[in-house]
Length: 526
Image 1 (cartoon, rainbow, N blue to C red):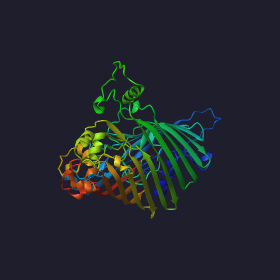
Image 2: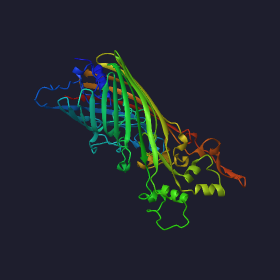
Image 3: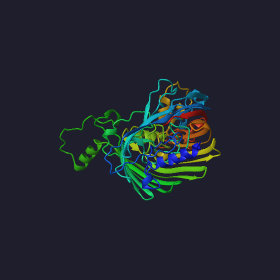
Image 4: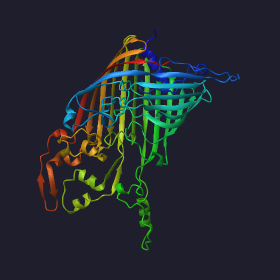
């Protein structure tokens, strides 16, 4: 019986290179990529080669992939999965805005099991279908959960050096994934940005290098909310990636992605922007060129730049493997309105009220707070992760992992009103996704260790611990000395002080949760 972990890591390494790297063109190996690094199909299957001189057509090959995974999850306080109370794929610790948030919770979850198939056509084409059964919008994640598409794409290999892929698969950007038994999220809010995306792209192999590029949709699928108006973005995402593979035990990768997001349309979204449904068509004899330009700009959609860069590696030395990645960008993810780095929308009046001068009163402050003009801000985010694995023996393995995600311009984030945090809220999801109650996330940290026991080649039992430490943003007028001022009129020079309240409800608010995951899985890939 071959060791399980070396085969898992070797498989993942080839997955990260998108099935194009091989020691020689005569031994070309193409396999589907699995971003979880937990349960890839056993071994590496060679694709049958086709003799170009033969008239025989290649036959279809069918391969079942997947596993049945069940784990018991325990957390000492509330954790969120993409903005919703959920133990299946937690990404952050929830800020305490409900009485029950400080209570422990647990559950048994078989829903992160996978089922998929690969249909090959010689070594020229392959179709991949993969689904799990996780619905992160449900706290219970019970029997009502429906299958969720993880991957659905096909690849075509016109030659040994060129590959074309089309469909929904792992994002070309930020393609290194940490080892984790949290299969649904695997630290996506704590250092790992890439997830799934509908894409059309190509890979080209040039010696030790692989060059890739792809265009894709502007919406991510790590968000349970429906993405609206994706088709109305005239510019798709454009991604580039370079992989350097000097030998089979090392991968270095760098990638970039960019797009322009259209986030507002006054003509069809007048209720939010305070604009009339259609522009004023009445003749204006006094209209100047400048006023005409201003009117045109007010009738157009707001456009935000979005993009980033990433650098990652995978390195294996004997029974030891390490992998890591760092990235930096603007508007890269869309977890929820309370998550890391979605664009922020507010008004100039709200911005003034939430600033450190929001306690000012009088004519100037009244006019500023009454300004309803819409304003868009783009948070900038730096992320990184590192995970280590070591095979103690054929049956036992140990691992460490850690990741961090931080907003570098937190002043643009939507803050929470601390006066709302001391009120016990009912069990309803709206309080977990509303940044004006929770506060936008300024920083998130996740670290832990893993261990596994493999009694059989296809059977694994595992234990994983995770610590989530999440910082939330409050409005700036409740920070520092401003937290002690209720109101102040600079003209009359009169004001009123206030009790700043509990320090943990102010701008340095942090929530921490400890989670334990204990379970097992059976891989049944053919």
